[in-house]
Length: 138
Image (cartoon, rainbow, N blue to C red; front, side, top):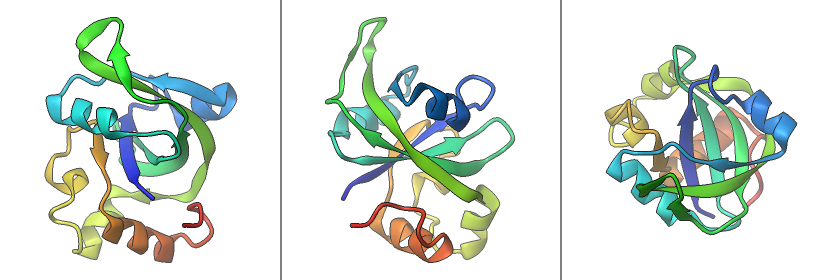
């Protein structure tokens, strides 16, 4: 079950916005590596929603509900539709992830400004132990 991570500044678009909207197009991604991650997402994949902008925490989960497509406003970018699934409560902070010492190769730790990325299965296994009953079953 593939997992990805998508970052958003909560003042721009938060997990609460997604919960209220129920579904949105995830756009605004411009970094080539992040665009590659968006283009790799497929329907029924999962997306961990990460609040940047000082909060620096995993706060929710969404499900991919469309195939990726070119962003009509930016031919170098891509968009995908996601649907709200739930919250991660309490949020998993970047500090907590780094303190585990297990994920030095994970782009979340290595490339702090990357806005979308695949999530390693080892991280999902760790997250399931940290927040039981939060993630969807395999």
